[in-house]
Length: 123
Image (cartoon, rainbow, N blue to C red; front, side, top):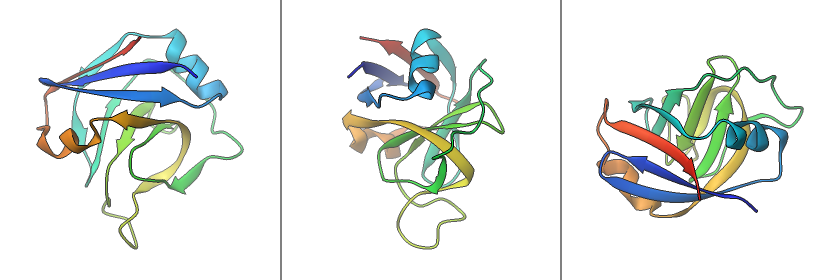
């Protein structure tokens, strides 16, 4: 399983990628950089990649999961409820391709501020 480092401002998280086509496509484009944007307890940034929605794409995800939002070409990290959540689980605005999960330092995400730099790179 492939591992990536996600640097958000002065904090770092590690994530493992699931064996999916979306994960492979994103991994092959690394490094990726942007600015942190928030929607509830989801941090995301736009990436220069166009991918179709996977057959198993979903709106309800688990805390710590990574998703690619095909509609907006965004890399998303879910760490709690969003404005459309119906319970404490994260819920994307519309279906995302779930492609990995944070395995280290998920607890730093609430400390990140809008506009901080985000960088995703291979390990």
